[in-house]
Image 1 (tube, rainbow, N blue to C red):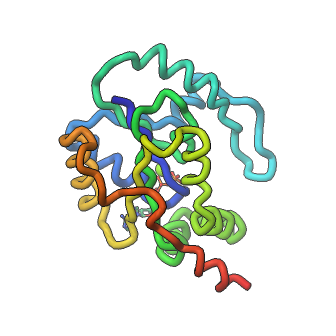
Image 2: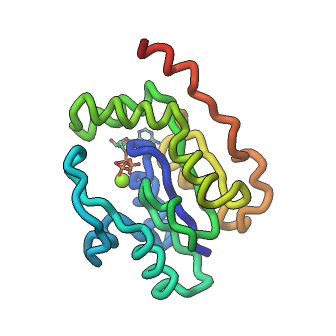
Length: 182
Ligand SMILES: Nc1ncnc2c1ncn2[C@@H]1O[C@H](COP(=O)(O)OP(=O)(O)OP(=O)(O)O)[C@@H](O)[C@H]1O
Ligand SMILES: [Mg+2]
């Protein structure tokens, strides 16, 4: 099973992945994979980062990870890949997300852009558009340590994602937070 672990930057994908790896789960960093294989289609000059070619990345994963083993693909772009069987979207309250993003030492504008993306459910709406609703789950990480979060994800894997009512999409709503910016 190919599991996409996605979410707005700062929601904690890499932190929880490190714990999952220690628990024996195979985790692939999709950003690293795309860069190392040159699956890029130019440079985003505004964000000073490479534009990842998700079609090439999707084709590569389909060919090279053709297995029933459980593999987690972590990246804020992983939900864009059609070959994924399940999509775990990590969410975080905007105030807490701002705190987490500050540790990345990004400039104010980049932090604001990502906090707004979280409030506007960007990753969720992209996921619904590309994957439909069946494969998707949302986990609120705001009050969870990376250890607690990894336990939840391990449980989901263990149960083959059966009985996942708690993580139904569409229940998380940060929309009132947007008013605080105006
Ligand atoms: N569950 C959590 N509770 C509190 N702090 C967290 C949690 N998860 C991550 N953090 C902290 O938030 C910051 C961002 O975490 P992390 O780098 O794991 O996010 P990410 O989703 O991988 O971001 P990116 O998409 O930019 O790679 C780090 O300083 C990390 O220590
Ligand atoms: Mg990361």
